[in-house]
Image 1 (cartoon, each protein chain N blue to C red):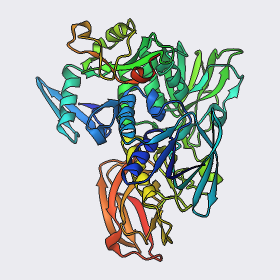
Image 2: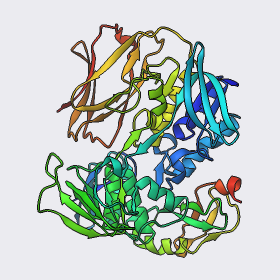
Image 3: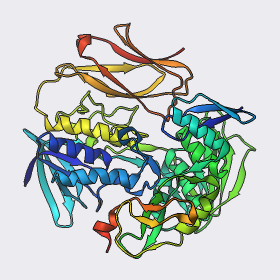
Image 4: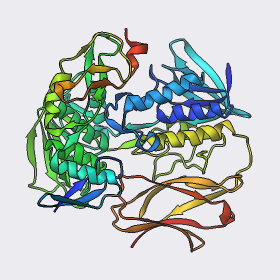
Length: 416
Length: 121
């Protein structure tokens, strides 16, 4: 059995940053990746705009990933690729992992774990579309994989359901490659993706965005031949008589991302229903001592720069992990806050300088992000606008507040 | 007056642009880059584009590329046409030029991955 200090599961941007940081902090570190190559989803994200916060440059996904892969190799960190973790067992002094790869089943032990397993796309099974089961229905990420990694065009004329960022990026990509995008349909009254992506991916290419409209039915025997779209009411129910048939050979879904936490759940780790990722403290330790979470497994990010940042936070803490009693205080959020990460503080920690990430529940114009302790305001940050697709980041040092386990720390967005 | 979304950075500022004769005034931008973007949008809109080029390597059938600097928005599909003609036969590195001075625009098409150096076989 291989023994090590820290095992990082997942070799995307979060896992790479976690492993590099853990190694630099002095921990013997091993990274496990199920694919053949490191880099995670960035390998297929060939568009630019990555790294503006971190490097002040507009990099493509592969360029951003390769900067970290380079550092990873410079640190001489061991990586097991084409290796899949099937089981994690808690032991007295850490964890034992079972992993399978081409040489069979391996057992590995570590004192601390970093779960950097990313997220998965919602599929057609999860959005309940009626009709036949033809080929030609796939997720935006699958279309991206086919075009950008395999060089295969999966459609000549398509409809995109959902206005998530990957769907918008793929609308532009398909158009550039000579395909026709008939339109992007979004059941909600506001777009899910970033405003700048609506502008540069749809508006630039004259691709219509239909809000409060959804796909209700697919047609076709072997291959998709058409879809039915319909307007929806405020409860997202189709409005009778508004249906329309659109001929196309593909339906591309960009209907949301869900953090991947099967391994976390197998350890009984508490999951936040708001983020669908583990409940974590200020160093991103989950409810299981010694297990850390970062990147899109923790909550779905819109910028990779923050994915790397959370990986560094988790990696550093995993390297310094020593089993100590935690005194936990939950951070509560008001109804205008969609979610807040971290969800807890460990008051026994020496340092309570914390990076907070949050999203608003709906679009708010002039507003403030306000923190109160026992009803008394202690922090306020003003925003000209908050939009759910755009995650916000705030640094705050809870140390000077002298919090106790009985303190009520609450966050809310107040309209100005 | 026209509303415009800045695409320079993730802030995505909503800007208002008004033109009076030759004067273009911009409001709502959080930084000078926004103003430049808005004026460019009015006078000479430019974009960066990213795509892939075909290779002869079965393990990496396509290689990601982008323009080395912005190109006029009106020339996007012309440049895409040139990108579509490329076949990479050598294991080139990240940043290497795939097409130099594409269509005389003074901009190169460069590789954005070093994958062929390790996997080009």
